[in-house]
Image (cartoon, rainbow, N blue to C red; front, side):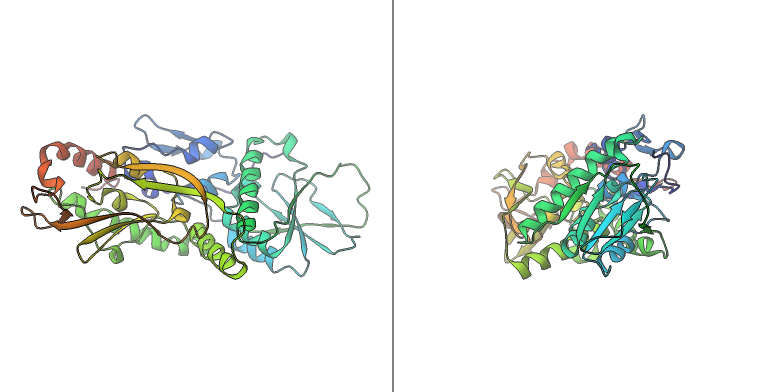
Length: 388
């Protein structure tokens, strides 16, 4: 039975959507934590109670902005261990399995790998990449008596998504579930090797881009509250997590090489005519799923379905209620969709680009008094601990 993995999960609130923007309540981590160690505080902040944390790792793969990390865990190392195995079939065991043994006498040689965490810690990128290269057999013997049994539903959902994504890339999903009765003869069996343990600071290295993005995310709205929020796209990064970036590259390559299969379901977005192209939605999108481009007097709103964290921040922030969210089957989810085009001009008061209108004045200049309280709340929500 699972008690604790011994892996210490750490939280970086500077990456948290709830800290960046007080107008939404992202609950990806609080909703799925099997041990209820992640909770919402009195002021809406997300807190991790380390003493209650079982170290299952579910939050590592579910947080859309990679708030949670663990020094002892390295998902890419586990992926390499599995995909580089000399065997075509790899049997996986979770950290709650006390007797991770596999049968050696097989017509087709099998490899046996045990990870220290719950299967729920593995991202969609991991399941997709491992399932693309190997036939996987997932042992769930210990799930029935597990103290964090709710984690099983999480990883089963992720596995089903991976199967859907593999089929969408014209690949045959080879991920099977296994439940062997214990108490059988264990002679001539080989113990599973542990994979995915931290050997280097790879995860911290991958987070460098996120740290830089955080520093660049704060400036203009706080220092220029009377102006439109516009910052060159190339000067700021997003909080798009490293595992999702890896998934985007793998998925796009597999779809290009094998051709499209049955389309998988991805987030979609619609922008209505009431949009004024203020740029709020794209500025605050944590993963860069929404972008604004301006060329030859036309402003385009681009949407990348594969990047979307489904945080619905864009929908909540839009003052014109112009954004509608949904999900639908589609191919090439990591390529941008043009969801809106607007003619733009220059505001005759502040001189910044704005949607063409009869007054020639941007929405920010028209609504300064109404927007100031909102900007004050944003400033407070984005303020760093100990900052000015």
